[in-house]
Length: 377
Ligand code: NAD
Ligand code: MG
Image 1 (tube, rainbow, N blue to C red):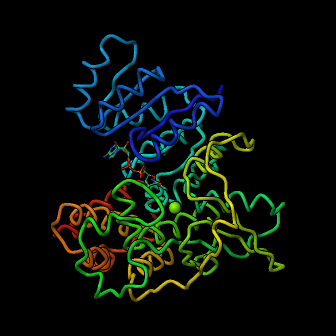
Image 2: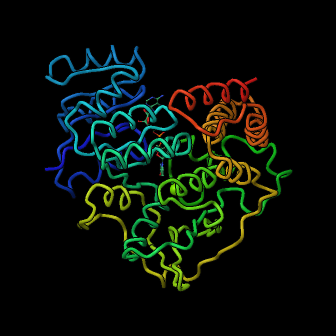
């Protein structure tokens, strides 16, 4: 029985992780939420973990009362999140929290020798260099949950020690495909939240609408697969059937296909290298009929160029890009700024926060703080 901790078990990825548990041999040792304590209580009663955490202190107090009749330890805050990651006796930690709040718990889990099923891409965007180095030192596996990175991981198993020449990341293009920046500038929150192919948390759905999500995934791929930014290509693929591709030196291109459903990449990260039956609907190419591919429109989606620039510069620029983006998306979701301003504020933060080439974890946290402050001002 594999022991699993699920950070962010009440979110989109978290609940889908819980959903596939019956297909795999696993024991859940920890669950966490921010404020969704009703759902967390239900999950805890069903799965009987050793410990749970509500990041929000007030929510944690209510949760403690709700679970008073059980032996489950109830923790709070960052300290609680770190305990669930590193001290719950997990073999593997699913990082399904949203945002760079996942960085410290992920680092703690790696330092405690836990494998990581990584959904929380913001962690790699902010501190990919530090995370990958720590994982290497501790002989810890970082298993991708993001569908594109899982696709690359699956295709790369055909490499047999040969070099990947190129990674081709597919992007759905989001709800505003084909629009100009001008046409998108004042779209509403509801329009931006209406993703054509995937049902996900609010933050990543807005990132998909600005295409910052693909920018973050570009940086995520660079760190996960140790690729130069020049060797990662983005292609818009409206149907989200081809989840990504790799190209080898001889020109052979391999892809992984399937209907858009996160349960398969989540499950594969947890059962790797085994493949077990999964309850996702099966792909019928005849039903799909045709698939379309386009070059991305960098003028309409400036977030893509900003992310590529951060990828080139490395150092603290990933943390700046991500921190400013998290703050700006938060402002947009609270109706404080226009959709088009999200990328403007990220660009301004990249211009303003001083560049640092060599970084420590403290530099990442400080760059994140500064970037948020600038994006909010
Ligand atoms: P979500 O908003 O649905 O869920 C986020 C989870 O994190 C919830 O359990 C929430 O309670 C918790 N959380 C939120 N803020 C927190 C905080 N400050 N401290 C601690 N916990 C907090 O998000 P999601 O769509 O499940 O995405 C989670 C991560 O997975 C993101 O990094 C996202 O980019 C990535 N991802 C998601 C999908 C998807 O299909 N949803 C696909 C690929 C990657
Ligand atoms: Mg993805």
